[in-house]
Length: 503
Image (cartoon, rainbow, N blue to C red; front, side, top):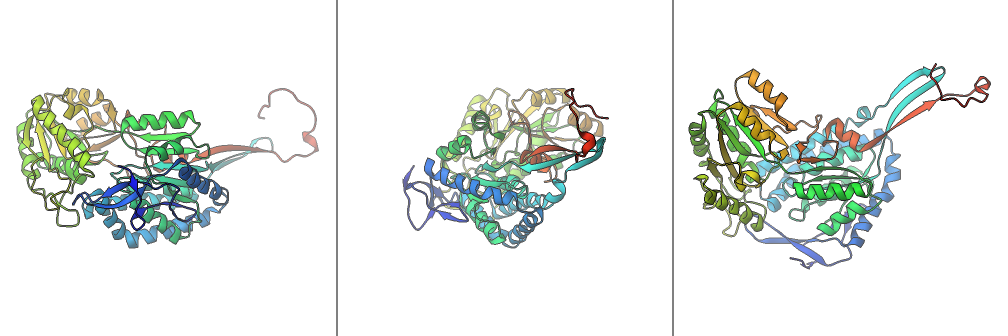
């Protein structure tokens, strides 16, 4: 609910290298998911606020574009060193607003830091090419240049890592940035803005616009924004892609997922059970790469479900600042929505092996708790299977053969991530060749690529032509030019209206 901003705890925007209060008093509450308590109010930008922040990025772009790669890289290195030293501070902020346990928050930051380190190599990544004497006394060279101000619209589940998939590369390549974090956990963005300033980044190169759909729509339609990077649900990704591209912007919109983990009869079931629990219940299932559907092939179902249940029962749910394995969900509304899927699965005939709706959590009585939940004998027409739940709910689907498992995955609307557990190299190789998914793990349950590879799915998990970070990220935040050069002398004179030929 919108309300009046409280001067002492309003979470503001960031532009021109400093906090910006904005022109409106509209705010939204920010809560601690482990207690249910409102800890602050985040500013909700008006159109004028969005224009102010975007103007800051646009004004800073020309000078930053013309700053040497050596200087840009020095600032990237300074940011890296500051983040390495102070990431426990950021982890506490993430835990306080998102709810994930501190170790998970630290892991998130470390994975984002990998992209910062990748971007420190931008002088090499932006190297062009040249061909001398491509034609007689004609040289041809290729260069890449930044786009201009770009916008990042980030989700709540990774308030540090997902923005870091994009802004280190964008900034190192010479662009300016406007980050729109989720209003559910907005403080991490401001902390990173302050760190950029401390690292020596010029004012206006990195900006933060807080808010809701009003802020998003301004970023999607403002002509000064040249590109959009988005991560979120598929319906919103479709909207972002359609709106941004219709306004002439380059857009990469990463959408939802329904990630399957296939377990073949020859797999090590202990290893597979460990992986299913880690990938299904880590960060309370609020990961786009979480395993939400285990596909048990052949006769392994009973033993596999038993092993998963035994492990899941040992998970301690509680406040992320305490000795807990899994924290709460991000909001009460989201907790209740996830619980409703458990209700529906049970009603539709799935076997409820482990019920997280009743959990003794080590945290506040009003925290947004839902423990690990395991459903067996899930059918493909149940909503617990068809929908992206984004919570600690693991469904087991039983099939008879590898071919059935493959058809199941390939017929799904999503193609973000998948995994196969097997000791058969031939089956694994066949799977990686035949499965219609962008990121594949072989005995690896969460196959998030390293920063120097690119992240992204297929089908309704990605809208746009380029994936995040890696070489595709560099290509997304730059555009190419080809320069053909000939230094004239009198022998080049005369008229020739025919099409130029190389000779």
